[in-house]
Length: 205
Image (cartoon, rainbow, N blue to C red; front, side):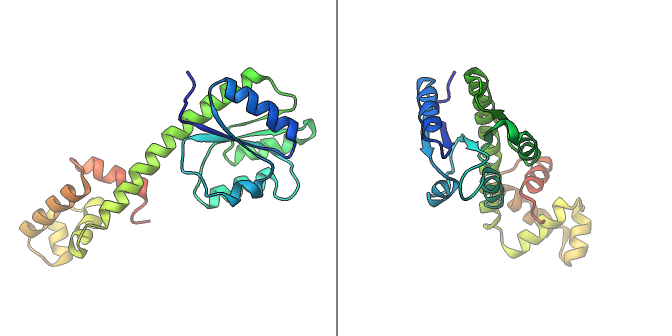
């Protein structure tokens, strides 16, 4: 079943490719945006949506690989499916090593492309759920007082209440109070959940 919320970005300098892919994807029920260059894509606000990119490897100006690297640096991880000429297969393999879903050589099979898009969108949805969870956790971390944050750092390092009390030079009862407030403000029910979210958010780095 097509994910009708998803957007498929087709980036290719060949107008006939953009047109044919747009017709194929729209007939399959996807929302489609076509662009003739990596620069045109980057000139727009980087999307924070569910979707994927169908990207030509070789284009005038910025190449597909360069766009892939640029999006990685910007922490925008829309899954990428590359399309290549037959002579570009080694470069396509390099793109996969850098995180692309797959690459297809032109001309490619429509059913194979649609299957890859379905996999890419599923991956995007999963990664976005993790990203949103981490973003929300970081937002809630800012609610902690300085002392609560100090206790939080000690807790996720595995220190016991008695050890935290000694390290911070406060009473053990006070540690328990701060610890309870940390759990409440961060919206977690267990130490395991707290450690898991801290690891995902890489806080502290």
